[in-house]
Length: 273
Length: 301
Image (cartoon, rainbow over all chains, first blue to last red; front, side):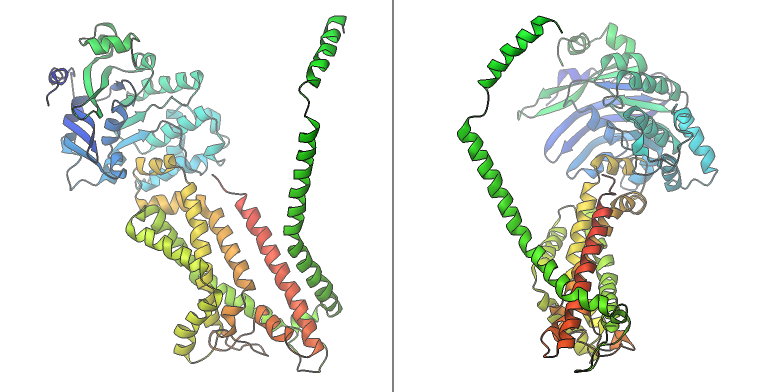
């Protein structure tokens, strides 16, 4: 059962506060094991990138941090994920409450079919926001570097924006609920290079305030935005079904310049994946 | 233009002729197009003839007695003139009663099957029942309302008619609402969950507003169906020569039943009124259908 490459990853490369602790986490869809034995600590106010080939479970793991996998029938998490010391999968924990503290930006821009203003105000209202909504909308849109482009058409539908603008609107929506952590699942994969660059700049600014975990297929992106990078790989298990596991987790520079594992070296140098 | 592209052109033309459609294929293609057009005409023929008949027979009476057909009561036999305001009012009341019952039930049932049931036993059962219900002959719906409302109240009434119509309207509302709910992309559902909204908040603030055009379409289609139904009203709302003072507990006239009663009556004036009422019903349904189409075109996804 034990995989030699897994055993080497128990020591954390993190210095400073840990926000999310992932201890020996395995994720199943029914009887199928999608992710195996992950140990991973997420540092506060840093950007952590998850990279790896398709099907290595990086998105699956990301979705466990805000319990989005709860929506998939048969999904199950083993091991322990703690957020500021609280076990996220404790039966007493309300997943809705978790998602209010750990926000998410999705792969494809998915604004609500409402006005730009309402897209942001809705999340705030849902979270019981009592303050000045106009001010919050402006602040969130400025935070997402979108304010100047949309300030004159806040009443227009969020769907009328371009793809890149929609994605920044989704980021604004995520930061409006003032989460502590923002999960980003390949946030730039549906965007053109210029929009991508803007979102990346944004990520760099956001990490002053938020802890960000970003899944990306783009290694240059990981090297540009991330402080730490986790490399996942997929391997065929005993039964022949493929499972994902964490190969190496280290400061980004080390992952790209001096990886400890051969698989990481092969992946970041483009020899596979 | 220089000469070289011209020569290339003439060359190209001779090459093109090799690729032109063979005569027998051209003939076959034309023949099939003609056949299809003929079938289209055949399919449209009933609609056209109905419209023609109803217009030619009903329009003269409608114009001649305008607007008294809308404002007067049906006359006794062998008396000229008169109208059917009681039937117009009755059709509106029974249809609205039907909508009042079927729309909330239908929307909630659809929300359950799509948003909460998600293919579990109950939602499958509900869907199966919806299909069965939409295939139930309308007279059976009338029988049902007769059994539970007319017998219980001891009188025919618009209430009973509304219950009978709601049985026929509910499947339409459920289906169109379900269709709308299913059209909401998974991405948006995840976004709702992702910002920490509860199911209730998501459904009422995001999903239902987006589905509204579908619901409106379903409601108008259901109303169109209800406005034209006769069989379920025959022994529920029954008929009334006069205005029902309290339609909720008194027999009530409707356009469709008026058409039925007066079309088989031996009096010419009554026959004419039936044609005029038929024209009104056709125009009503046509109008509602047009509205429903324009509502559908407003959908978000």
